[in-house]
Image (cartoon, rainbow, N blue to C red; front, side, top):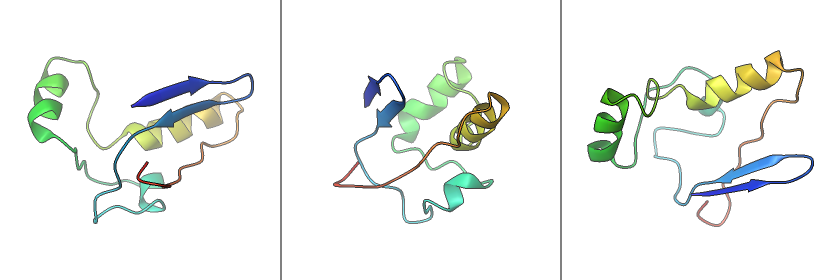
Length: 80
């Protein structure tokens, strides 16, 4: 995972591709969680380190809109 902060944007890069059941368009609507490693995701959720699984992209869109910022862009490129 890479997080890069620039003067005009925040970029989060995650190695790997989307699971076959998800598309970039589906990230903007309600969708189920498809964790890359469910053995890590479940205990992190139960311990409170992550919120409900499958809600992160919609939360980012909502929070940007509430702050008067443009919606985030999602892209898949070169395995990221």
